[in-house]
Image 1 (cartoon, each protein chain N blue to C red):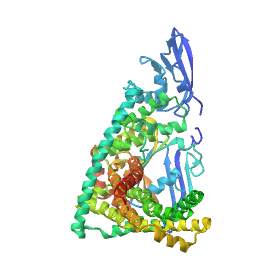
Image 2 (cartoon, helix red, strand yellow):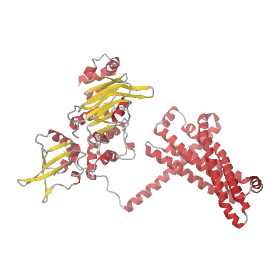
Image 3 (cartoon, chains in turn green, cyan):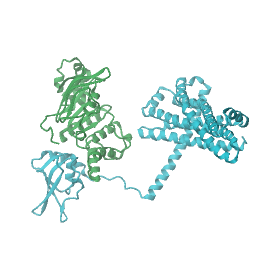
Image 4 (tube, rainbow over the protein chains, first blue to last red):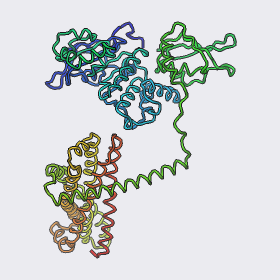
Length: 258
Length: 369
């Protein structure tokens, strides 16, 4: 597990090109994610945020370019890196035929030989860390509300104490209170577990509340990666519209007043 | 990555556990299976983490579990361990476990009772659905403009026309099997000529329609349940209701009417396939020429058998299509219930086909048909 410890980067994407038929999604895209940071990825609908996530996860083969996670090529890795990443998919992607507890135990069963009783206890710990009440452990995904499902998704994602957490639209569809709690949860997990977080989000409040840096996808590449206060000074037209539009201003002012 | 281990050191009458190696989710396999560290009945009440490698929440959980609650962790300079221990400790209060498993007998009766309640609910739902279906069909009859023509024709094409080749092939083989078995038996009695009647009556009266119905159940009852069920999961059915679209008009009526319209055609094609299979086998094994087969069929097998088969067809189609649509409408929010209802749609419609075929057989016998 010590490989690449000296490397300050958790994820390195270089020269990525992805195309579906004639439609080019990414062209010569570069992205670097530093260890221990929370990186937000923003971009318009259809700009290829989820495709980028899938490519980094190795679910999607790029047409050109390299994706390295902890210095390992995701395309060729055989399970070692998988144990060090946790993913929360947009809809939670919980196994519908298992309870929440069994969902959290699933990656543990796959990758460890922990004593069954201890494994159950560890799973309950993750469920608590994700902010779910204890009784939620025995419920099935269909019985959970949208917010609880997302938390259960996080509980499963951190089951093996990963080094990187990938979140796809974590606060989409949550009420503002639930979203703010979720932001706090992500920040807490990062601070206490030392996670690196790669987060796709549209939520301006989340960007202001938790992200150390924000990467902007536009024109088929990452146009810039910078802390928010620098992005606000950007003269890229899309970024200006995004952050200095009415909703962006409101989120920024709210953040300043806190 | 080193596996997690520990050594026990006794000093001043108290026992200290020195944690060594990496304490992460992936390195605790052995450590989590070992008995609590103790010497002569005394448990370690201090843990020294100075020699510890990497640690995560799972490792911190095990550390805390290795000592009594009044124990002490000597953090030294390990602030990371302190932080993790603080994070993990609040949840260490023993939680009430799920209720203990019921005894064998109690469990049996509980499941039995549950089943009966479920069957009762199911029967009630079936009645409600049948009532709504009759209302919808009757309403369509009174006001034909309510009928949605496009889905009707789409289902007729998919469930009816596209099923004709497989119906033909299956009944062809059934007819051939009946003829083969029949000639064998009847030849030993010296009346092999009766093979024609055997094939004619069996196919026209029973197999043509039953095979068509079973294929309708396998191909279409499942499809109806899956289509309507996934629409329910996707809240499409709710959207329809809100728009003021009657879900029975839009989803159920076209499917039931399509099945009703198409099953006579499927039965007819099935009859043709079965007779052809019987004819070819009779020709090959007992040398009954095709023209003689047809003549004898026309002379000895009454046309009433054909009409009895045809007459049963719409009833079976109604049962099958209604079972498919009903189970589709019962699908809940999750994928599991979709799978369960698609399966029950098929199982229930096949069961109903056989049961009603038997009931019809008794009725026709009493009527002397």
